[in-house]
Length: 107
Image (cartoon, rainbow, N blue to C red):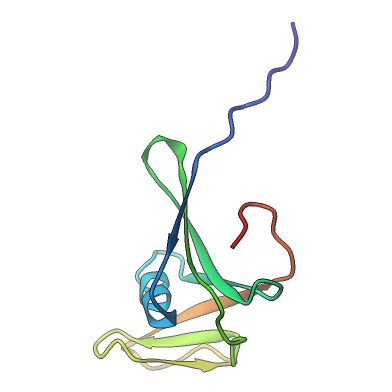
C-alpha cells in the first residue's frame, strides 16, 4: 500500500488597494501578524477559507517597514510604525515579519 500525496489546497490571491487596507485587516485578526516579502516588496497575510482554500491578501510595491510593529488605533483607523509594542489602550500592535523567501505564491 503506497502513500499518496495529499491534494494541494487551492490558493485565492486578493490584491488590496493600499497598505492601510491590509494593516486594518491584520489588526482585526485574532493573531495580528503581517508579512513583508523583501524580494517582492510586498506585504501579505494568509487566511484559511471554507474547504481548505488559502486566501493570500497582498499589497505590492510597498516600502520596507519602518519598524517591527504597526500600531493601529482602533478608533480612528490611523496607523504608525514602531519597534516596540504600543501601550496605548486603543492600539493594536501588529507584528511585521520580514520574509526573505517564500514558495507558496508569486506576488
